[in-house]
Amino acid sequence: MLKNILYVERLKLKRSKLWLLYLLGPLLGVCLAYINFFKNYDLFMQPGDNEWIEEWTQVALFMGPFVLPILVGIFTALVCRSEHVGGGWKQLLALPIKYSDIFLGKFLTVVIMVVISMVILLIFFIGFGYVKGIEGSLPIFTIFGFVIRGIFACLPLILLQLTISIRAKTFGIPLAVSIVFTLPAIIVASTPLGQIYPWTQPMLAMSPEDESPIQSYLLFYTLVIGTFVVLLIYGLRNFTKRDTF
Image (cartoon, rainbow, N blue to C red):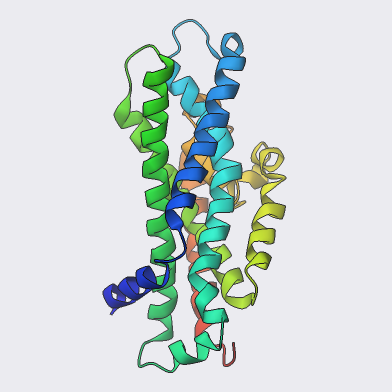
């Protein structure tokens, strides 16, 4: 059933010009990172540092707490937009489909959208690096690990924004929530609260160990998983128990 739901969600998004978001979001994150890196090259680079890793630190800084959370806000709003128009929720929920499957289908759709964005980010990062003449060996598996960690840390944020998007009847509300809570992300990231703040978790996960304020990765990923489980249970219960939309 989930496979069919994912197919339907993909069809509904066909006219949303998602390719623009897939390109513009990662492009913005990478461009800002490279501009800042070369503008402050002497500050970032120390003897023995790998240029690729130091440049990725800037990608994590701009993509993690700013571009990526806003993209998540837009993606979750998009997957709920058609249901908020013309009584779409009533039509969808009248079908012989479990409410939980509908919620999980929308969640997995956004996860796929985030994965696509992060893969494109990785391509832009490597491509720009070679064009700009980044020196040293490319630690591709290390960078790929940062990407995977960033996707994983996005899961609680996706659930939170999806729950908001389901309840909000206009596209602007979840986007506004995303922007408002993204603004203090850099400040919050340097505090203990940053490890459970969904808008900073992707940045912390994407950052190299020596550039991250995380002191215990075991504690951090336990908190990420705990946040994910709590938000998943809340999102499912909230969606399945609603009588009206």
